[in-house]
Image 1: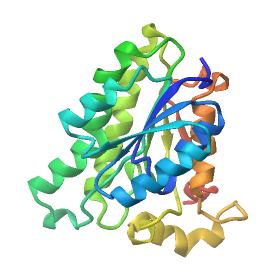
Image 2: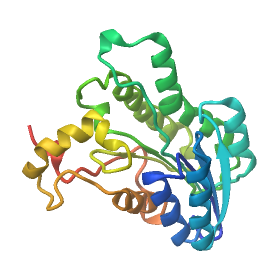
Image 3: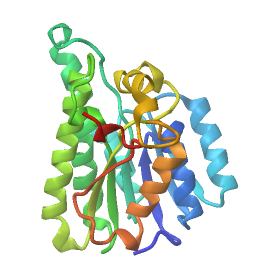
Length: 246
């Protein structure tokens, strides 16, 4: 199906990459967009204004995406033509300095939340709908102090593979986008961004390893379109060729 006149959900959708995705899906014809965010009300209201200006109705959902209450609220605004799990958080520490509470916080928001969203939203999603999850190169490569986030993203990718198989009979393609190197508010503090800055000049992209929010939004729009119907549980890497190098 297309996004025309449909509703979509974007977690972490009020800033940076998430907002770019939401605005792009509005330009593709989505008329209602549920925007998940954690706590920044000012940024959320500003994003909602931009969504309205783009011709779509924004629905703001505040709270931790790993919360049962928040997931239920998301589901109440469906059915969705597309669900995009972009929200991400995590504790950046060396492995031996992490605590169980850090593991629970990071894994629940980044990986378990996708499964919770699928359980809540997929039963009502029409045939041809899409679910897209934004991952990281840290799922496959070892980055400094990234053990918790990298592991959560690897788990996220595994969840998508299982959903791709189990939900295919419902006619709901499951795709995943492996978010490699990206430029976004606050991303400069992440180890993946620091590594990219050091090696960006060696990549095959004229813009080095940086992928912008609009780059990611374009890829997500493609994955939510009928043109991507044969992509199931797929990894799309956008890093300017960075990960091709040894």
